[in-house]
Length: 181
Image 1 (spheres, rainbow, N blue to C red):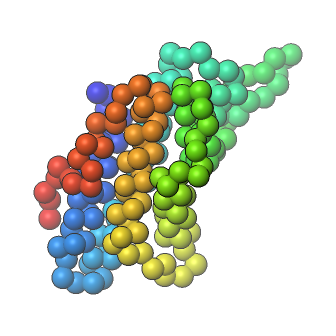
Image 2 (cartoon, one colour; image 1 turned 30 degrees about the vertical axis):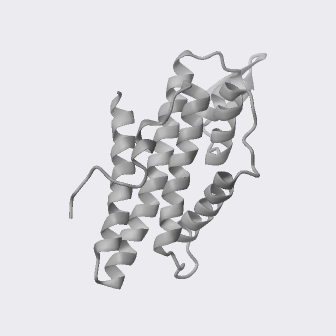
């Protein structure tokens, strides 16, 4: 397990632990803070895992130039008669990177009608409401639970597509290995 993989795992475990702490908290403002932390860390974990998977695939897979650019979030330019990947950052939506990984390695598109995809998209919207808030978004415990479950399911689907194996942390569901207070 690489350092990036371990850090991704820790972020996911922290997210699940903050959800547990929200349940244990008697103070409503404290519970809300734990829910916010749980939601944000679940997406930090997702992005960290996707970056680690992308790095693994960039190191050894037969990817096209444009696939490499998307996974590395780099710009492609035409220079001196050829296309080249530059060091210039080109942000790519998380969903697009997930779609690419799934399509490339499972040879199938993600079923956008599946329940997990709907939950995943709703979770992204929830995260965006908190990250780019224009007011105080109402984020409940069930919303955060569904978001973490959707992140775990997204990672499970990517792991099955890319590595042909289950996503190990999925076996624990929403139960954290951590017990900090």
